[in-house]
Image (cartoon, rainbow, N blue to C red; front, side):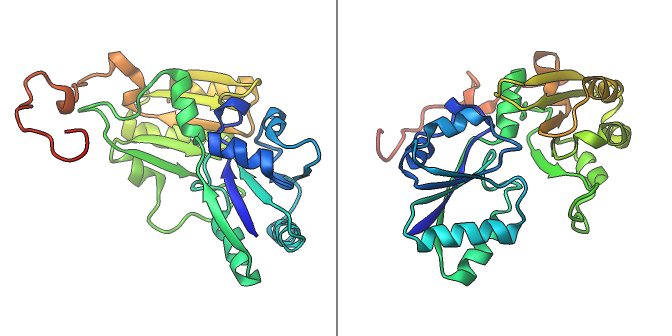
Length: 258
């Protein structure tokens, strides 16, 4: 048998991939992070599937549940919020499964930052403004950040920043980032992107903390920071060379479809 780590997307039941929906429909046992998912996602599960909310379990308890279900011959899905490649504890869980001799695989999902960007209608990479996106977090009551991954170092690049697990520190972060981006830099904070309780706050580094605190946001929010968020009003924005009318398209394509 195999334990399937499946990205549940940003939380909306209709933003799962077709593969994820199929795997949920076939699973005997489903472990899911109740803090971050809309309960409607579980509507893809069989009525007789055993569902286990992991929000109050530590890694060893989660692993034990996965191993026990696998050894019972169950088809097991471990749902993660967003995509398993980001802040999902995939590394820690699969290391334990390897030690227990349990096979596993991974199915990607729609990341929360992509849902947040879609909700505010912004591309995070605007030509001549920002061509890089930094996905990061900050440290509060959490695992220490590695040496060298200082927020001010990322900010100095001018890249679009995506901050996870950081909404409780919005005021401090805004002050830190203003040194590189300027207090007038656009910011969007999206709480529970795509879910029924979604909230979208927009502003600048100079005023976003007031909006976040007034809304009482404490978790499950993504913060987007950068000049690209100005959209059509982004100063200095250019257009993609790929679609430039002056680009030489005379070379013949080769390979399938040529």
